[in-house]
Amino acid sequence: MVRKKLWEKIGPPTKPKQEVFYDPGELKQLCEEAGAPSIFQFLYESISQPHHSIEREKENEKRTVALIYTLYYCQSQKCSWLQRKMQSI
Image 1 (cartoon, helix red, strand yellow):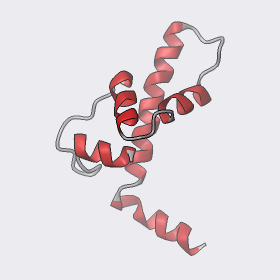
Image 2: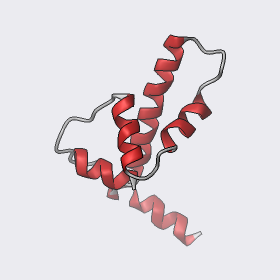
Image 3: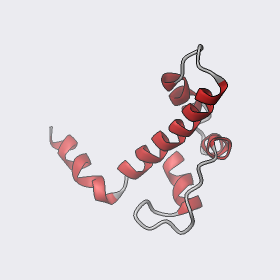
Image 4: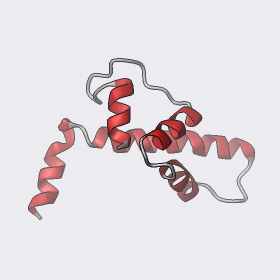
C-alpha cells in the first residue's frame, strides 16, 4: 500500500519522476493515506527511546523516513533476485 502511494508520488525507485522528499510529516501523512496509519510510528518507536532529546527525536524521525525509503527501494526490480531467492528457500 505504501509502496503504491510512493510509486504514484515519486515514481519507480530506479527512475524517480520527482525529487524524493524527506519531510517526516509528509511521509507520515502519505502512509496514513495509503492505509498504513501506524507504520511510521511503529518504526519510529523502534528506533527512539523516551530519554532522547528533542534534537535526537528529530534525527530519529529522519531515520524513520530513510528506513521507509530503504524498504521501498528493496521492493524494486533491481532487488527482485533477493525475492526469488527467498521464495526458493
